Amino acid sequence: MGVEPEVGVEQGEPQAAASGRAEVAGVAESSEVMEGVTALDRAQRAGEASAAAAVAAGETPVEEVPGGADLTAAAFFDVDNTMMVGASIFHFARGLAARKFFTTSDLAGFAWQQLKFRIGGREDKTGIAGHRDTALSFVAGRPVDEVVSLGEEIYDELMADRIWAGTRALAQMHLDAGQRVWLVTATPVELALIIARRLGLTGALGTVAESVDGHYTGRLVGDILHGPAKAHAVRALAVTEGLDLRRCTAYSDSVNDVPMLSAVGTAVAVNPDSELRDVAKEKDWQIRDFRTGRRAARIGVPSVLGAGAVAGAIAVALANRRR
Image 1 (cartoon, rainbow, N blue to C red):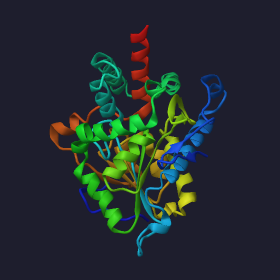
Image 2: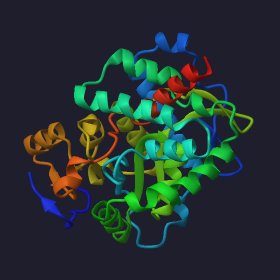
Image 3: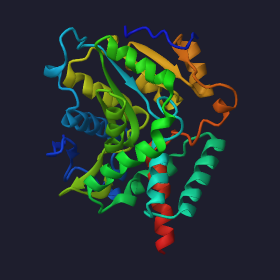
Image 4: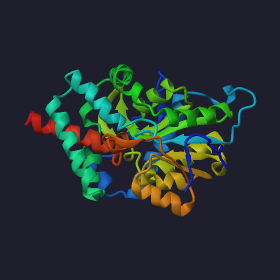
């Protein structure tokens, strides 16, 4: 089993770029090809690509882990509303809007679409496919280094003070126990790696965007790292890193992450939505809730569709604006 947290308890194949990031060429599929691929295949491809990108980033190679480390146990943390208040990609989009990548009215349109989704409370398969087709197209043609540099700036401006102290303490507990800690998020892997590095974590699994010659093509490798894709990524990373998933722990706020939570020996619901809270109680999973009063009610833009929902909505807004 994973480390037993004691904080806030409430029971109930990419190539490595020179910079250490993963540069992927020739492995993303067109929308026409993707329509002929099953959701399971896309999820598996997204998971494998994410795990490969995490390994390519090489934040903490096994051979460099200090002596006494627990190399077969690890912890996996969702980001949006679990490690961070709100959606990381939305904060990133705000930063890009401030830098004139698109207008604040485009951003407002996205926020309204997210609010409608939040109220509706269900994922529409057609909507997800649309988000997949347009996800990350708002950085198409942009140099990867430029977007990463902006991500560093925007983290300091808009994300650093939105980290849940309680969740950060849980991550540190695993680190102190000699375990490695990865973020697992639908956010683009480059942004996820920035967050992980700033928090002193091992690395991150995130959505992989295709890049060629150091520039984004605007297409994804596989699919958004969402739902079952996260579980595939965790399993793929476990194989590469020699992890025993029965000794690993996973944390999330969303019922969409039940596949990932079910893939490890210890599952913890953090700031859970109502559906995940019900599942956690049914399965006797641990529950941590660091929200209080009104803050819990204004958790921020949801992460239900993660990077695809945000990037897709932004891309649509940009396309409409250009027309």
